[in-house]
Length: 495
Ligand code: ADP
Image (cartoon, protein in one colour):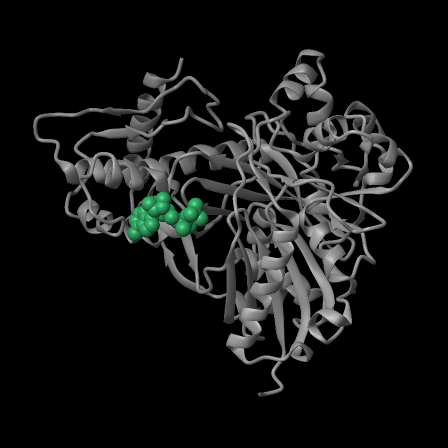
């Protein structure tokens, strides 16, 4: 066993708990991963067992340490990144959860959110939190738990109950119940946090009838918040990085200057753009959120998601059955010069930002007798790039900042055709990083920076590294013509 030191990133996601050990060069040296049971008690409801979140995370850490043959004393710091918004309430005396975690995807509080909208509270909520009034965020889930659990409100009012997002819960468990904290990025997803003043907001707490004593103390995203309980790993390790998963990914991509953005191309996509030191209020239905706090510096981001991106490829494979494997789409798309005028708008579940048309449904337009499957596949991949441009343009308009480069991760951007077309249609370079674990790397960066494992933000840029940069190669006229065609196609399916 060497004496090399590592940063341990805990990546607690919706479907699994992971642990990754990063060395000083930023290389992931070992990973542990355990699946998490999804509990569906009713249509549209999603829960997790908080104890299982903790046990699977511990098991993942154990697996990573054994695989890397690393002893806990070699861990310089722990960073945590997590599924956001998910709500856990626990008893401060016993440390036991009150009930299952209510997961971000859970729609059980749709009626409560509708009622607040009808009462005219949406502008107030938006102005203070940067969020849209939706069951997704934590506040209505906490309110539901207080209303639906007999006797809980009284116990909460007496200060016996704690609320936390998953980061809070993990820190509580890791410190043997000594700390009840969260960081600014996670707090900004609760709908109870004033993102300008950076504090829990009494008016919002009153609106959702949530006693202030439930809330964790809010800390910076980087810097030691506490030490792990020695009984856990056999060593006291500083917990020094906390951030929600998308914000951690933005940090892991090194998007630390205003105007820098990342897109994660998974089943759907998450786009975030660093907007600097003040929150930006969006005119296009995007979310404004805290990116992180490092030292005294707080940075903000605009966030938008696209419902269907990699899922287009799954649809071509599983429903149309015109490809066998996702990887085939690259060569097929490259086998034709263009789509022959075909546009594919994959609005399977409506269109999100910046169109916001939940009634819209998908369409394939511009078919001719000579359209073949390569054209269709190419149009499917191109749609991912067009939808990304739609959101990035909205972000640029909202923030008044031009985009200089797009950083990318996720399964679908392994596709070289897509990456090149994305650069072409944006007219800016698209970067694919050397280390594709951007989310876990971001948590490791925050923890490593907070403990001096990495000395500065500049050092992190060196560690990060780029696998490949795709430079735009399309002339501006063709770019505009293609994008104009897309906008027309979108116009045909929106109301
Ligand atoms: P998630 O985290 O949402 O499960 P991943 O980041 O694992 O997603 O990416 C999986 C998605 O990427 C799937 O929708 C799949 O269709 C798509 N995908 C994977 N490989 C390719 C490829 N070579 N070309 C295009 N799409 C791909």
